[in-house]
Structures are given as structure tokens and as C-alpha cells.
Length: 262
Image 1 (cartoon, one colour):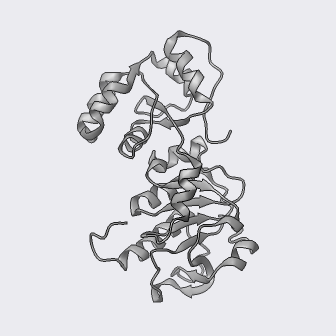
Image 2 (cartoon, one colour; image 1 turned 30 degrees about the vertical axis):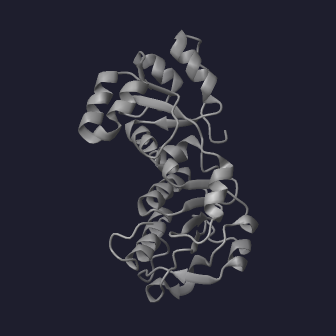
Image 3 (tube, one colour; image 1 turned 180 degrees about the horizontal axis):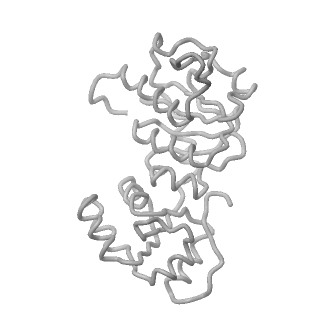
């Protein structure tokens, strides 16, 4: 599966038929928070289903009144068992939607644009779908220009989108070869690198993080302009990938004046 979600379900009702017709070319937004964030950042959502429409709208009233009217216009109530046929791992909030994936051309243009006001995060051959989603959520929160993955992991896989809580639509997310990485000085995180606390990371930095198992690939290491390390207590072997990205983006943001826009 490449950034879409589809399941074999019995043809049952207009809503199911419509969902099935869209699913193969759409991004699954699983749960209220994913839909909320996607709406806030301009996602086009042609279908949204809920087992209890009133409960989802009440949640919007409480947590996200800014998207309440948009949800009200989108949501169609279906029996929960029908929804679980369509979305077997249904989020506890009992709502799911299908969104149009952003244009790859537009994302690549955003990643290549210079000058930049915020770094690009590169995950070099990541293996864990949940970690990739958590990184995208972090990058969006810090206002990073985008997240690029190399290797075989699809950053738009439904599990990655679920981990990103819909924030794929808040930043440019694409898969690229190492040879195609966006322009800018490449800072690669490595245990043997220079302590990050002595460096100022520029806004146009490309921040690269190795895979959870094997670290940086030889190809990416060869392209790096700087090897950088995070402070770590002796005998601790590594940090979680998302933790490393969060620490690095915080270090970048700490060098900017309060309130600076990315």
C-alpha cells in the first residue's frame, strides 16, 4: 500500500460505495485529531464518517470549535459496525475521513525553495512506521519546512499518518533518494559528531537522522557537511528517533527570537 487505505467490504449503502470508490486514491484520516489537524491545514476531505455524529460534533465544540462548522458539513453517520468494516482499527473517537494527498510536485517545490526560514528533516531509511509519524508531528509543531524519508518506508502509509495525527498536511512530506535531497547545509546526527550545544543550526539546514537499527547510510554520511551529536550520558546507547528529532529542532528553535515565524 502506498499512502492510501482500502479494505474489501460488502457493498452496503451509498456511503460505503462512495468510500470504497475514493479509498484507493485517498489518505485515511483515522480519528478526530487527525481530521481536526487536516482541516486546519487546508486538506481536501471528500468523505467523513462517524458512528455517533453528535458525539463527534460535541468533541469539536469542546476541543476544536474552529473546525466545528466544517465537520458539521462533512460528517455522515453510519452504523458503527459498518464503519468498523471500512476501518478495522477504528480510533476510539469513532470517526474517520478520506483526504486528497497533496501534490508531490508542490511538495518538492516547497522543499527545494530557497532561502528557507526553517530546516528540512531527513529520515535516512527509517524502519518504524510509528516513529516516522511521531517525527512528522514534531516537525509540523516546530514549523519545519518538511520531512523527507529515504529508503523503502512510505511516509504516507496509513500507520504513519495515524502517528502524525493529520499533521502531514501542515508540512511537506515526501520520499526521495539521498542524491535528490533539498539544498542547504546537511547536518547529520552521529554519535561521533561535534556536540550540538556548540553549534548554531541555520534556518536552511537539512537535518538528517539515521535509521533506528543501523544509523546513517554510507551514502548520506558521505554527503554530510557536518556530523553532529546530541549530549548523552555514558553507557546509554541511543535515543528514540523522535526524541532525537525533537531535541535537534528545539536546539534550532532556541537560537531564534521568541515569536519568530517559521
